Image 1 (cartoon, rainbow, N blue to C red):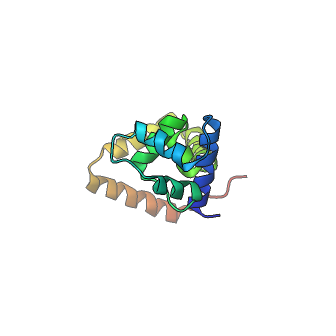
Image 2: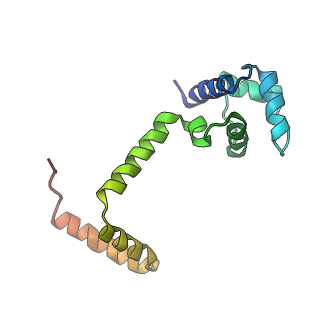
Image 3: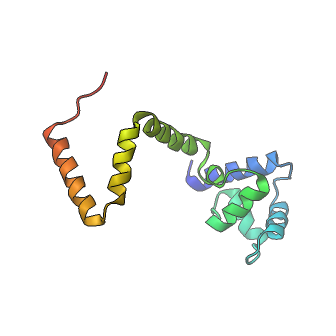
Length: 134
């Protein structure tokens, strides 16, 4: 299934969960009462519902506020969000206080000095490759 079709399924489910009928005219009316920009047409929202198009980021924001769903969940799905959270958790669990201090100090350096530090770290990584942890 492609990205547009998956978005369409998430949009339909969110509309249903919010207690509205999954119909283009309902979506068009509810969206346009909340959107401060140029109104969308019934044809445009029909394309969202059919999986032919994905709305712009600002329109996704309006949809998510109306439907009470996180914009990134509506756009990319819960699995993508969970994947990002898992990576973040792995990063948080694997890094201690001293490493965080080093990262903060590194990020505070000017770009030329960061480049030098990065090259030194890469040289050490090549010279002393990490052994797989069991």
